[in-house]
Amino acid sequence: WEVKISADWHERFEELCAYQRAHGHCIVPRNYEENQSLGNWVSTQRRNKEHDRKQDPVWKKRFAQLEAVGFEWEGNSWQQRFQELCEYKEAHGDCRVPRPFKENRKL
Image (tube, rainbow, N blue to C red; front, side):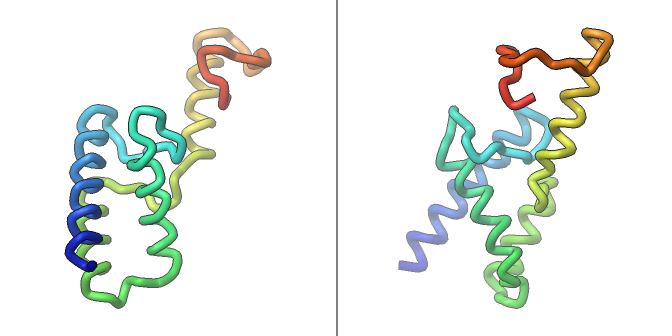
């Protein structure tokens, strides 16, 4: 049972590393359309840290691996939306984002 969980964890970690190389960050959206499993896994890692699994040797090693690749523990969604709004303002001269804004529905 633990072997399967460990193999799954390492598989998702490798997917996270590939995502980081492609996007330059580890802020994978929970509803990431290209890889829903990765989005869910990232959310689970954040919850695991919140549940104070830092003392468990296995999790301690995993947390260190995640931090080594620049994992964002907070998810940083507010900061991400703020950056997108700044980019919108730069392009359009104001912060009046139309609804719906097809280029970025979350903005």
